[in-house]
Image (cartoon, rainbow, N blue to C red; front, side, top):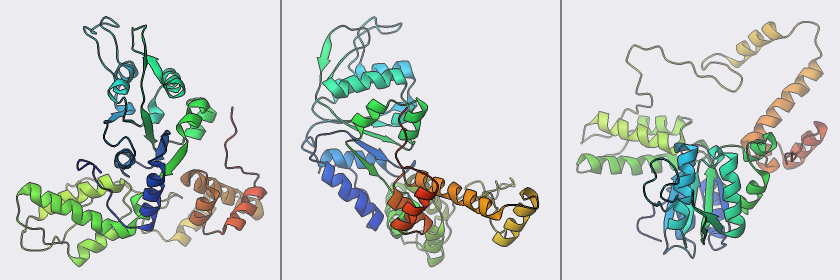
Length: 348
C-alpha cells in the first residue's frame, strides 16, 4: 500500500468486519457505496479500497459534492471548454478525466442534483461524457467509490435520488460502524491522536492519560465519531500542558465554564439526563394519555415506532435491527410480519 495512504486504526470486531468487507471488494472493478455517519472515516475507507485494488499505482481523486454549488460541481466533475460560461476563459479538465485509470471518490453523494445524477449514470453505463460547453465525447476508465450518511433508498422513493443510479452504484454497500460501536478502539485512537499532537507541539514524549481521563473517553457517546474524538484529544493535550504528568482532564465541551447556559441534551424519548425513567414515564402518561385508554393498541404503536427506528438505524438490515432491539432474528421476523413491514422500500 502507498505510504501516503492513512491506516484505519482499531481492532474492534465491528471495524474488522467492515475492513474485511472492503478488502473483499478491492479486486472487483465495480462501483462501491460506503455508508456511515459523519466522522466515521468514509474517505479513509475509500483510500484503502483504492490502494488494495489493481489501480493502486494510478491516481486517487476525491471531491466533496456537498461543498460545491451545482453549476461549479458539474464543471469540477466533467470539465468545461473555454467560453462555456461567463468567466470560463480557458479549458478546464475535470475530475473524471484526471482520474482516468484510477479511482474517483464522490463524498456526500446524496447532495447531487437529479440533472447531474443523470449525467453520472451515463458515465457509469457507457464510460463517456462531454465537457460543459463541448461536443466531443470523452471516454474514461474510472472506478467510482461513493459515500453518504443519507438514506438513499428513502430518497429514491421520495424522487430526490434516481433508483437506476442507486442500482448501478451499489454493486455492494459497505457500512462503517459509528465510534460508539467501537468501544475497544477509543483509547487506541485517543493515544494515536495525542502522540501526533505532542509531536506537532514539539514536546518530547506523550505521558499518557490518567485512569480518570481514560474512563471519560471510554464512557462518552461520541456523536461526532472519530472527528470529534480527534478534536477532544488535541484540545485536552494542548490545554493540559504538563509535559511530565499524564493528561488528567478531558475537555469534551469547549464552551463549558464561559457562563453560558448548557444546552439540554435529550434521549430518543425526549427525557433529560438525570431524570428517572419511571418519573419521566409517569409525567408523559399524565400529559398524553386520557382515560380510559386502549393499552394494547398503545403498546403495539410504540413497538412499531421502535422497530421502524431500529430498521432505519440498521439501514434496513433485519438481522442488525434485531440486534439493536435485543431480539433474535426469528423474533424480528415475527414482529415484521405482525406489522406488515418490509425492508425493501417500494419503488415509485
